Length: 134
Image (cartoon, rainbow, N blue to C red; front, side, top):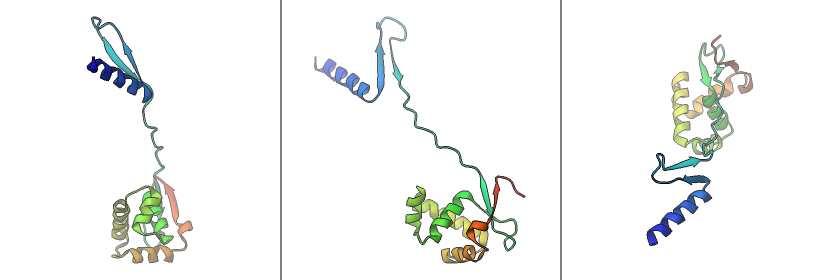
């Protein structure tokens, strides 16, 4: 009797979680199956692939959209951790993007990256190209 009480509690628990269980005669084929109500997580919208070109001083060099978001957050004075929280990334991911930017710009320190970006004609006037090279 205890076993069937547990089974009944489990079925009730499934129903509370949004599952719907249907039962048929055990002698029929497909005797038991669960029909899940839409439990799928909503998919995030894909972003456009934007490229932020750094101008004539760095010909052909660009930052990706995510790299640019990291730089903008760091320009506000955020630490890597704060930038990660703002962008819903881990601080290690922000550090990875920063490492890529330093490699592109051939600098060694975060402050040098920020100085270069500040030294450009303005962060808002960086050339933007949506997924295609010019």
